[in-house]
Every structure is written in C-alpha cells, then in structure tokens.
Image (cartoon, rainbow, N blue to C red):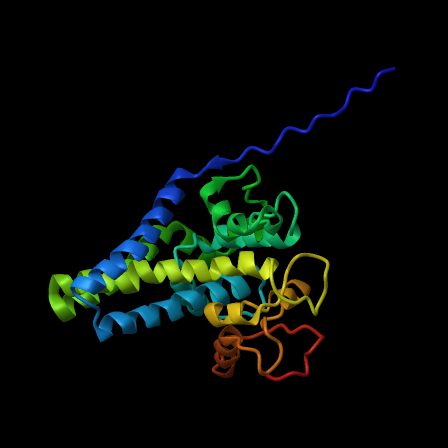
Length: 289
C-alpha cells in the first residue's frame, strides 16, 4: 500500500494595509519632516519638554499599564488609576490594551512557535515591526477572554481612537497657544508624531533585540534575553529573560541596581495606597527596589 504524504500548506500572510500606511506616515514624517522643520524654523524648549513628557508618560503607560497590570496582573490598583495608565498607553499608538494584551499573552504561550505574533525565529525585521504590517492567520482573541470582563479595559478599547487623537491634539494645542501656527506644527511634529516613532521603536526593540542578543541567566527554554541597554529606552523592559522566567513579577529588573523605572513607579504607587498585591517571584525576592 502506498502512503500518501501529508503536504502542509504554507501559512498565509497578507499585508495589513491600514497599519502599513499609518506606520509609513509616522516614519516618513519623523525621518523627513522633523529635520526639515528644524532647518527652517527650529524647535522651542516647549516642544522638547512635551516630547520628553509624552515619551515618558506614554512609555510607562505601555510598560506599567498594558504590560505589567493588564497582561500579567502583577499588581492591582483602583479603576481610576488603571484608566489613567491605559489612556497614557493609548497615546503610544500600540493598539488598545485588550488587543495588545491578547498578542502578548499569545507570545508567552507560543514563544518561538508559528503562533508567536512576533516570532524572533523569523528574523530581526519581522519581530521588530514586520509582524504588525501583516495579517497573520492566528489573530484570534482567545487569549483575551478574561479581559472582556474588565470594564476599564473594554472602555479603553471602545474609545481607543479618540484617546490616540487626544495624545496628538495635546502638543498641537500647547504649541498653538505658545507660538501660533508654526509653534503648533513644530510641537505636533516633535512631541506628537516624532515621539510616537521613538516610543514605538523602543517597544519593538523588546520583541526583536531582546530575543536575538543578550544573556540568558534565568533560563534557555526560549529565545528571550536580558539586554540592559534596551531597558534605558523602555523603562526597564530589557530584562526580558528574567521576565519570561517570572512573568507575573512586577519587576523586570529584580536587582536594586537594575534600571527599571516601571517597578519604581509601581512600588511608589503602593506607598500611597494606589497599588496593591504586588507580585514577586521567590527568586531574588529579598532584593529591594
């Protein structure tokens, strides 16, 4: 009897055109628009201040709100604090917390496998940003089931677009009030679109660089790696091998000297009664913040 071989069809991937157009716009405006405006007009201290403030705010909204709170439940907080964190995270243009968490939970469950949304085995550019520009066949919402029951998460999901627009309207309005239309344009370019570019690529470095380069002191079960300098860009998220080993720990950098502003923010929120149930792995639990 002749055995008929099973032929596996390649997994279909198609371009996600809206995301591709949006990210191309952000990239072109940053690479071309920012230096062109700087040459002809220059940026004011208000532009740079808002760039830093919104980079800091939206970055921590992702790391503390989207990642450690919603995805891994590494601490608890009042709903109004959660809402504030998710608004800040929405300003980073990384989709709603529900969609973001669904992808990230799937990443941990299927790390380095076909269903891993940003599978580093497919190369640097795919894991860095290419996966966002494609419609993969595994983008179901089964990993977000518990999030459908969270009223704050679902509120942020429904109003995600207005939240994103508010993060762009803020620098535009401040620039207009301070220096007229030219000031509004400059602040919008630098603290709005340019800031989005740098926050996005900082987060992308976790998915790419922290799965390709660095050390693995906490386990070699997957491709995750500790990369301390990525933590400088991402408020502590570069200690990725530790995070994969102890996902629910509110700290990514467990040692006191690890640069992890996200854990410092969570710890300080707890001092004021604005965060509770901080989860720590037994390994390194004696290490202070």
